[in-house]
Image (cartoon, rainbow, N blue to C red):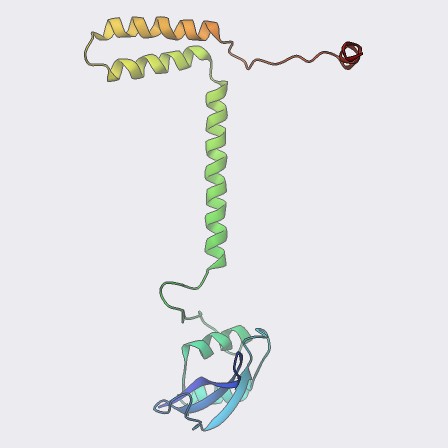
Length: 183
């Protein structure tokens, strides 16, 4: 069976590859090949010199394509289809669309949580008191519910009366007065 695969060439730490047609029984380093179909330099990711006509001719004759060469041919627009994951399972191909979609979902969740927090902050103190009273009554088991409800209601009313509903604002003296105090 014939296969179109890469054959490594180049110096140490400077890899370049040939795209070759060879028998599938030949090893990639054997040097035995039928035809050179192009070259690939992974350091210059976009630069590949592949003879499109020869590749399509051999594929039409039944030659198989290795997974990496398949992905390179898709990048070059020679063939159409989906890329094949050639990486180990621990480091899969990063799908940029999926990442963008996940990011949008996270932003939407954050916005929803922010809106909910703002609504709770704007809720009147009486509604908060009612909600707290109901929660305490549901969780209490030792004392009768009516006594707990009255005690909690009194405590919450005292706390609400002591603290203003709006945030306490610190008033600053006008700039002229502060300058006079400094002198």
